[in-house]
Length: 266
Length: 294
Image (cartoon, rainbow over all chains, first blue to last red):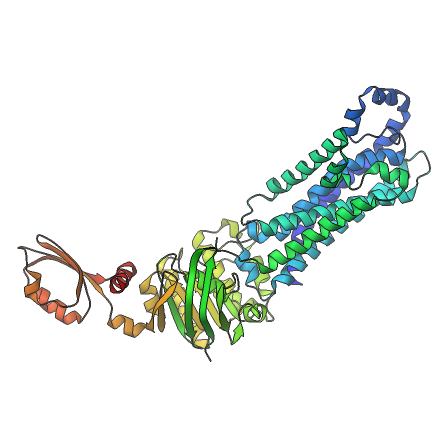
């Protein structure tokens, strides 16, 4: 458990700040700001209706559901997904690729521990960090919505929205792990990680604008479409299949590459 | 049974050659030198032994166990110091060493303190603030803190000042006395000669010779250069075993292999202005190997 405890300890501070960031955005936008916004709905609604629909879609605004507490939360979720994706990929790249970036692969792989153990313990450490963040996020979101909502809440929709954030965290963590294992060199975790997240986020915006169905399969942020969640109170099966395939596939590939690859001198 | 053994060990990186058909048998308690120019295959061999890379063909065993299949068990008893050392960000020396020690099933705290004292290293300093030489010391302690049975050193002396090199060699000699087997790769012949019992020479990925240091010393080449007041006819002086002879008027240089007394006797008969006799460096010895093959 040496690597697990080491990575848990090393990531504590960063996880604390992710919790603060995600929690603050959630509390501010899904909680504290909602009453102000709700009180002004008669002023705000016509303003939104004047904006072209394509612009609203690209901003993740769905006017049918926007003016409820959960609907507003689901709008904020689009940006919370982005933050969760960043945390996932930065942890995947940063923890699995830590020794690659620091040119310390020789160090970690000459300890009396199999490569398989090193990878699994690192992946477990990331999972713990992500889960802690998700639990804290869910608690803050729940308290914020319960505390500030003006109408009864369908908590199943809330639960689905919350789970979608966890799924995004895990998906991007798996992508980060995959990239960290296939690269020969890793100079900047932030550079690589944010490029991937923003590229996929932009693809999500493109899909919102052009509404090409096939594009949805290529943009992970679309896999947990909030409008569908509201109407059907469930996830879309084909998108869940995509999530499962990409997340599990990336993790298994990353594991195999990590265990088998030649580690060259630096 | 040899403690480290390779049989026809071969590694290709795509189409480029790493090592080809390397056969080595290192006995328990030996200090074994592994010399060759840059790119000859020293690091490739050591990385194969550590299972950092996987062989294209052939096999390698340590303690009689296959290095790939039993990497985890073997690493429990192996200490490794690479030519360049790198560490985690924002860590104190003692944190890194304690982390390294936590992988082994023994208490290494006293040993860390002892080695740090010998190498004059402050355990409370941040690694990022250390000079390259001091970072190397961290690497030495990290490689030896668990009293390994086999120590693999890949050009380990870079960055260490001569005083520290001596202390490091003393520590290695003590480890060897304790029973540790040492494989020491280097491109500096003199440091291998100082420490090792046997030496393998590797060139272009192939072992060209394995012999005792004593036998190599007896055959050592000397690089001789001198200047006389008047040009001399080398054929009349009676030198044997000369290679790479260059004569430029009154200045002469060559590689000499043979009895030093015979050489000095012959030189004494000349009307010398200047004379310089030194051990030939490795490159020149390798040049000799190339010539022999041609």
